[in-house]
Amino acid sequence: MGPLGIILFALALIASIMLHEAGHMVCARKAGGKVTEFFVGFGPRLWSFRRGETEYGVKAIPAGGYVKIVGMTDLEPIDPEDEPRAFYRKPLGWRLLTLSAGSLVHFIIALVLLLMVPLTWGVATRDLSGTVGTVTQCLKTTSGACGAGDAKSPALAAGLQNGDKIIAVDNVPTHSWQDVTDQLHKGQPSLGSDNKPTSPPVQVTVTYLRNGQQETTKITPAVGNVAADPNQVQLGLMIGIQAPPEITKHPGPVSALGQGFSDFGTYAKGSVTGLVDIPASIPKLFQAATNTSQPRSANAPVGVVGMASLTGSVIKDGGYASFLQYIASINLFIGIFNLLPLLPLDGGHIAIALYEAGRRKVAKLVGRPDPGRVDLNKLMPAAFTFLVLFVGLSLLLMAADITNPLKFPS
Image (cartoon, rainbow, N blue to C red; front, side, top):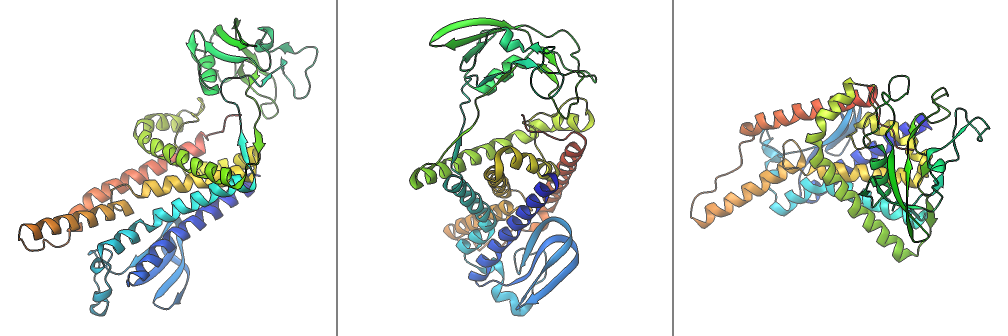
């Protein structure tokens, strides 16, 4: 699934890029503008053809794509015959629509995919409230069924059963499965290069509900599968509990559409949160790239290389429905990121267009002449600084993706 996952991811990403640029092109043409180039990639031309006044093609560096709209900026000369069709001469509404069209296309792609999943595959639900789905019977040193020499799992030895709902760990209330796992692992020793803890595991007190009655037990994590093949069995400190499995339901069309829109909102919120968290996560990302002995946090940012390598796991664990949701989440993130009011992003051009329109209106109200367009040459240092930071972050992400790849939790 590895190579197939990477190929599917690459095709989905290329398709998203082409549709993004097509959105810009269609709107520019509808506004009466002139589009001279439509390319996937940057750098030297590998292949191209001309149709009408537009050259279409592929360039050598697969790091995105672009359309060239005459008069998009004042940093390039405009032929006199093209001056009436210059982009900056178009009405503000058309310019804003053209500039935001790329992000709007990403949002449409994400919404269509998120609507397809519940309509086609149904809705996968999972109880992540803290209820124990399965108590592992033993800590194995080999793959296969439990043997006579395999020790009981700590959870089984402590008396936990399937269906128990964990409500607190060490008197800290837990409201979700994530809370449970975080508290169970909090304060536990790290693992050395031999997959053995650097100090004795710490005992925890688990409070749970069984048949409506509150009970308490103590659990000490154990070291599982130290001598086993890590490709066959799980290594590390283990408790021996798993969340309930997913259950797929097939709702009616109305409920399925509602689920799609709900997922769209959830993914959009997650994208915004991820953007806000990027600056704070850079030190951890640098540590992940340079210190490969520590596993990378599941909440860490991930680059294109990492996203491509994770695609196979996404399909293996959740099928093609999860793959479509994965691509939808990526499109949502790109669409929101692209609207940041920073050059050279589309959001930066939108901010400039709004600023020009605003100061033109103010000048008219106070009887002053039109102040004209913003001098983009004065903004180039800020745009160049952002570009350097963006490229640096991309390279750091690539290094972390290669040296310390992110893995989905089992």
